[in-house]
Image (cartoon, rainbow, N blue to C red; front, side, top):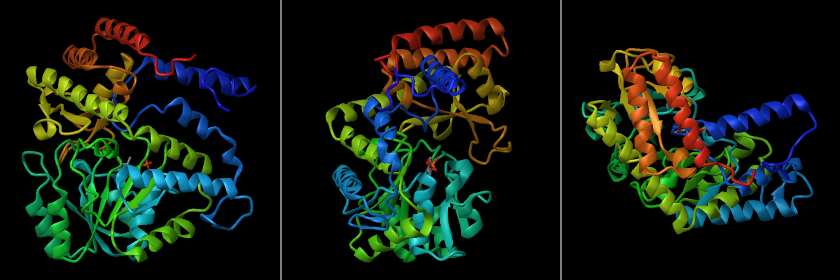
Length: 418
Ligand SMILES: *Cc1c(COP(=O)(O)O)cnc(C)c1O
C-alpha cells in the first residue's frame, strides 16, 4: 500500500517529481477554496489493489465476475453516505463532480432542454451551463445573477423561470459566499413544475456539520464532489431524498451505462472511509474552525477597507474585489505564489476582465484549517496578503513573507509520519 514515507517506485524520474510535490504541498499555504488534504487512510485506499478490478454495473448485478468484495465496499460506501446526508438514495460511482452533473442532467432531461443555473461570474460552475462545457453545448442554459448586494436574487430567478419555463433549476456554486434559501428555490421550481438540482460540491462538509442551509430536504437531486470541504478522495456522488424510486433507477442507469464505464473501486473504497471520518464531533469541529478562519481573515481585510464580494461570507470562502486596488486577479495570484501563498484568480460578478485575467481572487480556508491553522495564523496570512497587494512588486517584501510562510508551514505538517 502507498505510504507517504515509502518510495512507491524505482522510477527515479517519477520519484523525484513526487518528492518535490510533497515538499510543495508541505511548504505552501493553500487557500484554494476547492482543495483539501485527505487522511492517511483515504490516501492508502486510493493506492489499494481495488484499482485492479472492473465492476461495471450495480451491486449483485455486475458485468464481470469476481465482484464479491467490490459489492461489499460499494454497499458500505452507499450506506455510510445515506446515514451522513440523511437520504434515501445514493450513487457513489461518479468519477468527479462534473461526471455527477452530467449523469444527473441526463437522467431526467433531453438534450436541448432548458435549464436555469447560476451565472459563472456570479458564483456558478462551468458545468452549470458555460458555453465551453458540455452543459452549455448540450442544454439550453439560462442564467440568474446575484443582486447589487451580491446575494442570490429570488425575484430574478422567479422572473426567468416564468419566462423561460426551464425543466430544471440548478442551485449551488463554486465562488459564492452568501446564503441560499433552498425552500424558496424549491417553491419557484414547483411553480413551473421543474426539477430542482442542488450541486453542493463546495459546501458538502459544512452541510454535514449543520453549518450551512441544507438543501437536501428541498432538492429532487443533489450532486457533490467528495474532495472539497468533505475532505475525501477526488470524486463525485449523486443523492436524492425524493419519493420517486423511478428517479433513482433513472440516475443509476444514467451513471452507468449512460455516462461512465467501470467505477473507480479504489476511490469508492476511499469514499467509504471518508464518509465515516465525517460522522463525528471531530469533523464538525473542523468545519466550525473553517468558518472561524474565514471570519478572522475577513475582519483583517475589512479593517484595511478591502472590498469583499457579498460583503462577507457565510461559508468557507470569500472573494476579494481588487478593482479599487488597481491590480488584476492574475497579477496578485502570481505575486502571492512567489511568497508561497496559493490562491486562484476569480471573476467577480459581471467582471469586465476575462477569466484568464479577472478582477478578483478567491480565498478559502478548508486546507489551512485541515493542517491545523487557527484564527491567529489566518489573520497573519491575511496581513501578508494585504502587504503583498499594497507594496507592489517589492522583492524584499515577497522574500520576507515567503520565509515567514515557510516557518509557519513547518509548525503544521500535513502528513506527520514522514
Ligand atoms: C468543483 C465543482 C464541480 C466539479 O467537480 P470536478 O470534480 O472538478 O469535476 C461541480 N460543481 C461545482 C459547484 C463545483 O464547485
